[in-house]
Length: 405
Image (cartoon, rainbow, N blue to C red; front, side, top):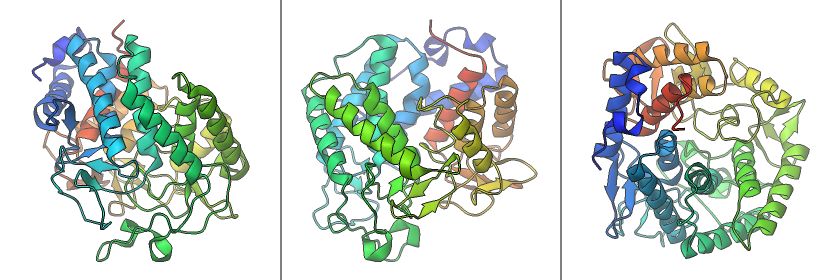
């Protein structure tokens, strides 16, 4: 797709510095020219960057800044991407990443009957929430509803039924062991994960980082899924969605809020984990996800923990401070998390400061990495991460309060 950044965001070049516009333009053009391909039926397929597969979650956040454009081609692309996500979800609702066709390519074949469409089959609740989020935002932003078709209806039926099933998770129903890989690439307890009690929340085997959950109820993912279920407007499903959302919310209140702040994971048996990860959904990102207000007291208390040394994945150095991940080395922070702290701060000053840091920590590459060392940005992971690029674009747009109205 050939689209000029100036056409997507009229007037933007006059609202930011030429240097910053160059970076925005580079990120947007890389998205269109390097990540955007198509499946055999013409529907879009968006690779995550330097890995040639499409993650349901990543693809939503890669197009998030495009929701600020009203270009007709963008609206068509977003609607078709929603259709792509639904198509792939229906291939395997427990998978997180897919191929553009039944090629059999995969990160690792973890299940003997793994679909040839599936690049990785890690069950991540946020994948479902991300699908619902994109579909809803298209409708709200543009008044477009044609993507709410028969396939969307079929996907909702599958999703809600599976969510109900995973409220009472059977540990023998999904076993994930990946021999020869880091421990966080497999579920504990011989691939079955830690025991969980029934809470009303929905089980998630893996985090948005693709790392295994320590405890099976991932609070940010449950809150995100709950939020989207509450906002679902599709005939025949609103009552079921509202009931499920109510049960999840009750479970979060009873088990996931401890001493006035949100835990990251709990098991419903008395165990909890207080931390946050760079990947979205995170506890830090809850206002960005429209789950709650940034002024919410529990969020504010939680945010203070996340952005402090109480969070084992918070790192601070000479160049930057922010949230990293079990997924990457110690003292490596993620550009996504730096941007997310600014996007949820409601402070233009903090947003500009974060953009300056991101501009100056790309090791001269002109593109965002997955993570970098807080004292030496020449040490980084992943050569190119489109999600980080596009979150940078979203932060630029937010910093100038850009709107297509």
